Image (cartoon, rainbow, N blue to C red; front, side, top):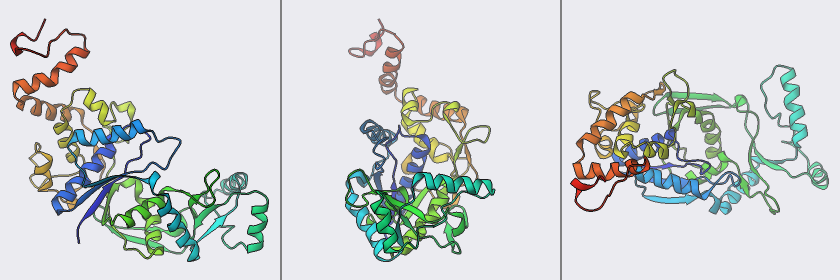
Length: 359
C-alpha cells in the first residue's frame, strides 16, 4: 500500500499555525513512508472563501519548505462528485430529504432545552411518505439531505495517536445533514463538510487522515459514511491541540497565530518548521532539538506523538530561531535583515559593496 495523506485547509483566513503544524506532521509521515502528500483547498464556503487566503495558504506552506506531490485540488470544482455521492446514498435508502423549516428546528431545540436534553435532530422526516414529501414541496419548502444515523450503533476505531476510540451513534446529534440545495440549483449541489471530505478522500485514495483532536466527532460520522458507500476506512490519527502557557487553546490573545505573522516578525522559516515538528512530537533522541524537515522525516513516527496538548513556548521558539540565524553566513543574514531595517525607517542600500550598505 502506498501511503497517501492530505492537508485540506479552508481559505477563509490566513494559514493558521495549527493547520501548519498539521501540514508538517502529514508531510513528515508521507516522506518517512515513501508516500504522497496531497494539497486540497476546501473552498465550498462561498461567502467566506477568498482568493487572497488561498494564495496565503500556498505561500505559507512553501515558505515552511513543504512541497506537495499532487494538487492543489479545489472542492469548488468537484460539485459533480458530491452530487453523485449524495445520489448514491439516496438510492441506497441511507439518506432522505428533510423539509423541516428553520422555525421548526428552533422550536424543537427550545423544547429539548426546556427538558434539559442535549440538542439534536429528532429524525421526524426520516420516514415521510411520497404524499407528504409532495405536500411539503408544494408549500415551497426546500429540503436538505440527511444521512441516517443509527442511535444504537457504536463506532470504534484504532487511532494511531490516541489508541482505541469509540463514539455512540445517539451522541452524534441525530440524522446528519450532508447536502443542501443552492440558490437556483436543480438538485442538491452544495455538500456539507463531512460528505465532501469523505467523497474527496475516497476519490483521492487517502490512506491516512492525520488531523487535530477537535475532529474526533467528525471522524465517527465519516466512518459511517465510508461504510455506507462501501469504501475502505482510512487509518486515523488525531494530534493534540496547540495550547498557550495556561493550557488553553492558542488564540490571537496569545500573539501571532498565522504563519504570515511569524514571517513578518522575522522568524526564519526553517526554525518555524523545526519548532512545528516539536509541538506534540518527541524524536527518538529527546535531547535533539535542531533538525531539518528531511532529518525529522527520517525519524518521524505517529507513535511518538503525544496525546496531551502541546504548549506553545515563545522563549523556546526565540532560542531556536536564534540558533538558525547565528548559523547563517553573514551575507545571507544581511539579505534577510535588510527588509526589516528598511521597514523600520532606516535608510539602507542593498546594492553595491556590503561594507558601505549604511547611509
